[in-house]
Image 1 (tube, rainbow, N blue to C red):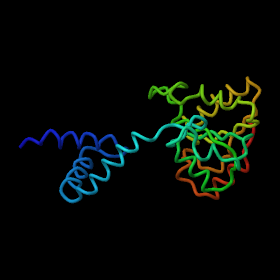
Image 2: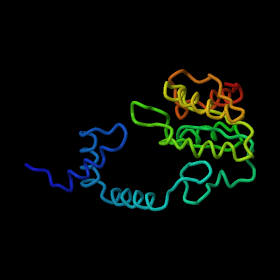
Image 3: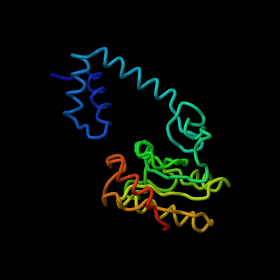
Image 4: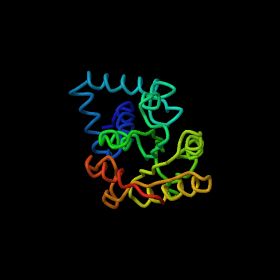
Amino acid sequence: MKTPSSLEGLIEALKCLPGVGPKSAQRMAYHLLQRNQPGAQKLAHALTYALDHIRHCEKCNNFTEDEVCELCGSGRRDASLLCVVEMPADLLMMEQAQCYRGMYFVLMGRLSPLDGIGPKEIHLDRLIKRALDGEVKEVVLATNFTVEGEATAHYISELLHVRGMKVTRIARGLPVGGELEHVDSGTLAQAVLERRDI
């Protein structure tokens, strides 16, 4: 029996999610169509709305509905500190740890030449412009302690050092190979407090 093309399309679309293979996508599609059509409608509406309204903050590159996100628009943050993280989940983890009161820049990835991700794909030109805006005195590199995260931190530090910018790296209180969004708040707070020059 041939699967309807619209169902095939739904299964194929669900496979774009991380960790979702053909079988999981098929189970999700059947569940949404057979057991939870209101949930499917809500999901479709939420995705459409998000795609229409979410964009990148002009200052930090994080997701927002406005030109400048709420965090960048706050007058209570220390504008002399700029923390560079890989993903929005990393920014959220930093905020939950309540150990950092500066500004952020979200790369939306990390350097990975094998995957075709270079400086342009992670918006390093925007980061350099932001770091050299005259307000920033220190750039804190908080990329993950993976091979790609370390390479990204090293590349950014080289770009900023030649321009006379002070660059620090969060301390290795985090496990090697670990990612910020999976670390407890105490460990992350200690890593930020013990950051070092690189």
